[in-house]
Length: 159
Image (cartoon, rainbow, N blue to C red; front, side, top):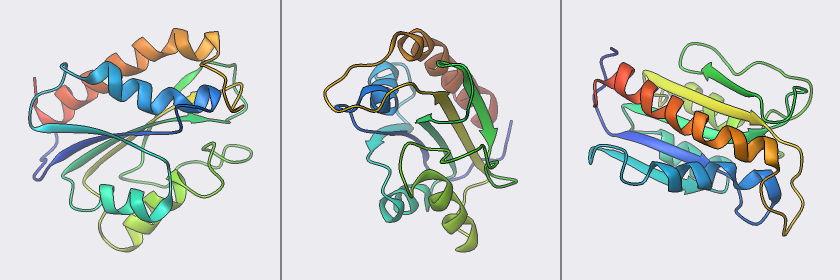
């Protein structure tokens, strides 16, 4: 268990109306009623300044986003961004031109990155407007949701 002082935030990054980009907000929906009252879960578009604001002042932050990592669609990866930058994964890590990676590095440069910063990324197939989640991403959503709950319990001592 980590020494977490300050609020614990879950941030689901994405856009509900753009295919697999809806993953982050849908994970936030799936977490409702499953987290302790001391943990807040919010959705965010992925805009850098807003993400830095959400990350800053948190004792722990858990982020989830659809990604383009060159993996099999629906593949989930977890990164500890508190100790090192997100890896360069062959193109944009996030579905956003500037977003998650830049926000984390800006928070780190401002000495505002919490001691716990976990990123859950799922390989997406489509970001087309008006589409729903692809089947591989939809199939992964429950596993990613549970992985986030488990990580919060383990690292912050919240049951």
